[in-house]
Amino acid sequence: MSTAYFPSERRPSRRGLVSTAWLALVCIALGAAPARAQLLMPAKPVPPPIYDVHVVKTYPHDREAFTQGLIFHGGHLYESTGLNGRSSLRKVDLESGRVLKQHSVDPAHFAEGLTAWKDGLIQLTWRTQTGFVYGLRDFKQRRTFRYVGEGWGLTHDGKRLIMSDGTSVLRFLDPETFEETGRVDVHVNGRPLNGLNELEYVKGQVLANVWPTDHIVMIDPASGAVTGQMELLGLLTEADRKQPVDVLNGIAYDAKGDRLFITGKWWPKLFEVRLERRP
Image 1 (cartoon, rainbow, N blue to C red):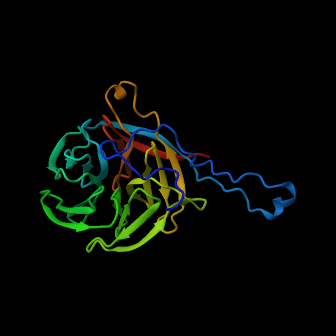
Image 2: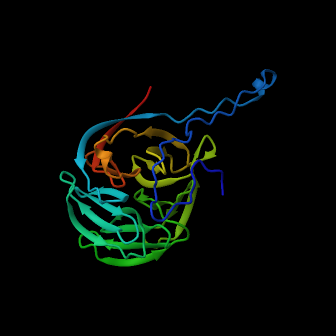
Image 3: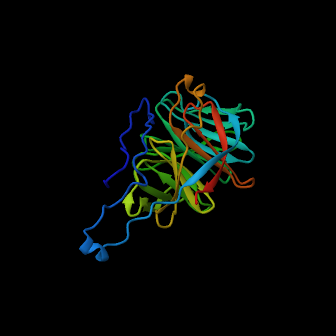
């Protein structure tokens, strides 16, 4: 396994425990070379651009939702929530946060990433190596599929599924057969970035939560290079935190309205945000 910034081992009862430390995504300095050798040394790596996050609007979010996957489709949010015995698939009204439809996942499974494909919804599970395909309208389970290893995040680029497994790897899957068709190692200046979690495909880039932090990175799916980073600390108030909350985990994009939404596990709020590249 490659050197990791974040551990891939997770506790089944409280996956995603809060860590306030951002483990040096941008602090990858290689150190100064001796003066006589400086002309022979490559330039110091340049950290990925930083994007400031501006809240456009705040919406209510169910505190009972241990959010693992989030998408915006057809005017509604669809959400995959985790924990064994509490996992679910949900259709949610954006404005009110009200759950419009819900399917309970078998207690044997810890539900994870979610994406929509054609007229269905595809949901991963954490350690049981099983995925589910549901009808978009009725939530009826149509089929199951298998994969090797853990399932974390899921999105697609219109041609293939993109899956994370908690390491620095993104896998590409055929959306009809679920066979793996390729993979890419995600890196910052050549060094692997572990902990890739919930995913969303936005304008040619993959946005990924980095577990166990409140940070999101932008990834070039062709090269695996991290092309941007954003910190989302301080979104929740002290009042929001009077009841237990966990880390940021949930990215959804409304392509038609060009709106980006984020939330977290047990968060009472969902935020529409705007990104602005820092000069």
